[in-house]
Amino acid sequence: DQTIYVKTIPEYKMMIRHGIVEVDDEELVGDMPLTKLMRLRQLCAQYNHEKASVLSDLLESLENERVVIFYNFVPELDVIKKVVGDSRPFYEINGDSKTFDEDTFGLPENSNAVVAAQYQSGSRGHNMQAAKYIIYMSVTNSAEFFDQSRGRIRRDGQKAGRVMYYHIVAKGSVEEKELASVRAGVDYTVDDYCRD
Image (cartoon, rainbow, N blue to C red):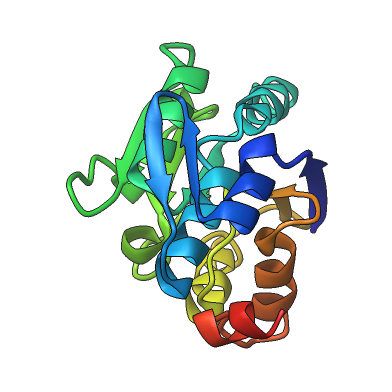
């Protein structure tokens, strides 16, 4: 496991203080603990443009490798697609689309393919052991999704001596707390957020 920290964006602290913020021409309102937690998670994920830069650097360093990228929110998929572009074979697994096929993914001509998988849709029931790298674009709050996502490449048929997990995390944010929680095997809930 390797954690790569990015800075939180200024709007993150504004959301904590005021419960409302404008970012990328959108108004985000967090007027109740559950919606505020979700908005903070979004501000760490798709609105944090530094994550796209880190993702680009990671993919460049892994240019000849198959990579699985896990994400939470639909707009994150747009960021991932923009970063990957047309430079590599690209597959996705989410509630709207499943273009991933494990046999195709493992073909020699797909040796540098990328799979973007939303946690809920991609963390279970998919064999991705042709890859040995997972990049977490954002952190899940579900210990089960976290554990299951890791198991997509750490399974029978994995030919690599070791697998690698990269977590892109907004420093000093709810993402750090979520990651610590799910690593310990415990869901991070709105009650946890309210206690923090």
